[in-house]
Image 1: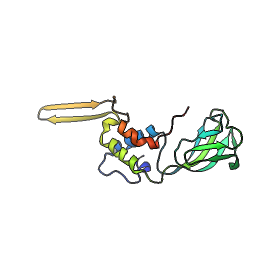
Image 2: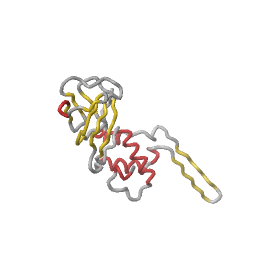
Image 3: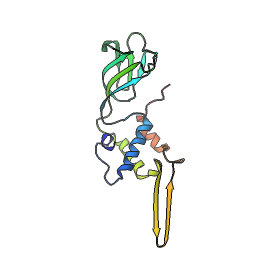
Image 4: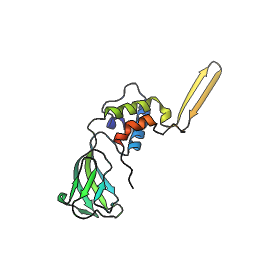
Length: 171
């Protein structure tokens, strides 16, 4: 997972912590961000003239199928922010009624996202369970940090950075 978000590995960081941080960022923003990739997704039809793809940086739409029928590209238009508009009429309202193949994502991981991954990888308590042990002479101590108020939750500082990359809430 690390290699496909971070174009260059984070040197000196635990690979598992980096993978967990990448996963947390992707879960939080709702899409993969980087690198550019072609995906085929099945979506519920919105029943309106606007379809929202799970991306904020679309670079191509290869095909759209509605209720099993491949659509002519002249029947829809799309924008880089992931909006696909039906030129005449409305999209189906059927669940899993649309299949879209599209290319999206940044070519390289944006520096702000890379910095967030670094920050989360440095403090694994922000991500999830971890354990640590200490031994000093005849005494041993072991602690486990369970997910709690801080872990797995994006703090306000990180939220402000990631807000630019977060998919809007969908109904």
